[in-house]
Image (cartoon, rainbow, N blue to C red; front, top):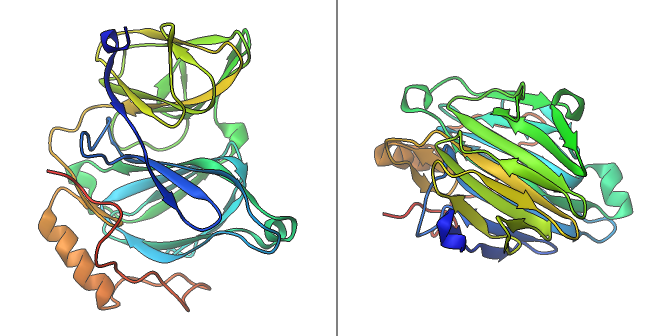
Length: 299
């Protein structure tokens, strides 16, 4: 039975952003975090019209790190540190907000000419309390730098942390595991029990966990200490995410995350007042603070 090894099943909230959909499983009314992960979005898969693309205007973050990982397409990242970085499938962008950063995400011009594809996962990670107000930073890790384990039709790229005897070079601030698992028909991969909190997410295709079918775009939070086998009969792609449990809660309001509600209120005031830094070369527009945000924490 699924309940024997799955603690919680989280169904996504889907937002239509005009041309593509985003499926959000974290935060959720039933659960805010899995390890340091407190936001989990699947973007697409989508193919936008020729000449169009995504244009996420400059917006702020505090007290978190964002992780962008693509299956298909490309995104140009710019931030208030002066970073300009294109990300493509298999690489990872890690942006650490710390005491405050502003960034934009847009489809590259060459992608727009052909009608850009968009498919991938964007997550946010909570920072430990002692590092919430650290200096902002940005890190790009190329596809070739991330270790890949391949055996018997299964391929797993380690995005963050230690898994299957290999370690990704991506910076972590707390115990973190994160991997992209591709299964050919008939292939399987073990999900060990080392991490304190773990979740499996079927992004596309078909897979079972201990013989029980998984539904695409649902997040399955595993029971602690129980090993399991992920298998696919016809082929599938899944993400494994988790790490150390956080002992203190995190509050989420729009793009702001913190262990302190007062800190979030200060960030709201500062964004309204124009006190955050600007993104060089992309400072003519920005996302205004919403009256009612799509992303909030739950008591």
